[in-house]
Image 1: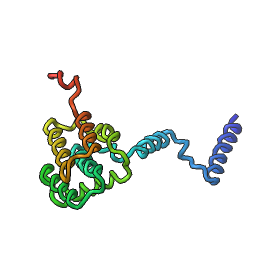
Image 2: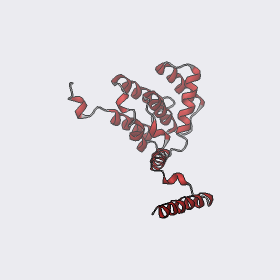
Image 3: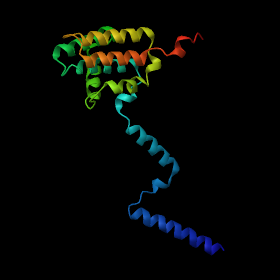
Image 4: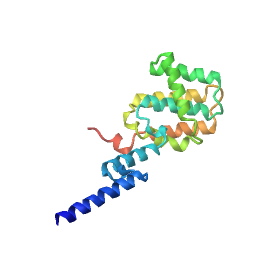
Length: 176
């Protein structure tokens, strides 16, 4: 009986050794590794713009997106947006430039921003305060009207942001 158990154990270990030398990744057999890998795989498939958790970063992204809907962003638009960042977000010029660059980079692969608004605002929607919502909508309107009258796409984006950040019926009547 003991010899049979030792033989089976040796055969099992020899099989694992041969699998390893042939290139099979033995970590796949670890359930904790598999679970961790699946979580990271799910997170890696999500767009970076859908993971923004700070309201200021989401607002900056939407401001740059509003300017981009009018075509390529001009130097004047860029400077106007950076000045908005400095004045409204109380950032230094360096931090405002970095925020602008990060927002532009995140929007590089986005073709149509309007359907993405709900997903962009979802992680940080609860963190927005009523005065921040009003300020964001004002800034979006300023950016849209900065060079000429807002385009249809810019107006749709502003309406979508207003719709997504509007209080729900539950929020309106919840006095607690």
